[in-house]
Length: 310
Image (cartoon, rainbow, N blue to C red; front, side, top):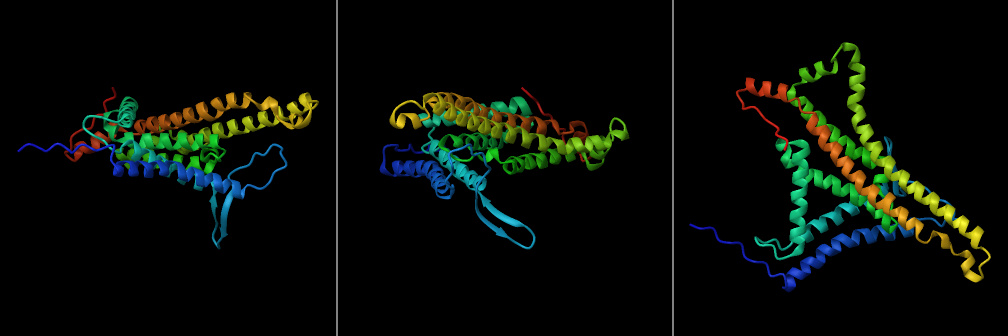
């Protein structure tokens, strides 16, 4: 018996277009909701330099700790819902022969992510491509929402620390695949006196990953704010003689902040997302003690595992 071909999707049908509009709304509405919340909760300022962390929308003090719902949490959920809407939109109407440009774009993204994981982690980790793509997309979009005036979750160390701790657990999981005793012996290598430094080095990995990502995003936001404020003051000093409302307009801020934003917000945000994903892949792949793991598998009469890197 031959398999029946999947029915072709009618991309011009009303049902198909309604789903497209729903997925498009999933991409846009969460970000618009965050903008509305920011407008409602942002207090009136004096027009000076304002550099602050995430706003607290709701706080509750308990006997053990304090629970808060901050701008970082809300914006992170908004970004995740928007990314989900984007994925559903790009994969809507898949067919054996691509008839939509969005399918070609989705296939290109999948191919590049799989190649990136294979080249940096090896064939054993090929199934890590969705995770690497997810963490890279979440990081990049979390940084880029500052272009619409929202607080970047990556500018909050609590967010980047959460990501780094997740990666740390994955690193430790693969390190223990060689056995707890072998891992413990490795802490005392090459000589026992190095054990404290080796132990500190284990915990230094998530700390460095978190602060590297957070520091680069936050520093870019601070520099942009300081330059914008300086240009406003310089504009009033040099162009204050202009008549009417022209004297109050920060004319010198036209152009330069936009150019700086291309680097600090767009290029830096995307680059830090790529760096975080690369560090994740390299640290996880490098954590596997292949010799010890294969020795344990040999004792259990299981085949050896090879991690071939293209």
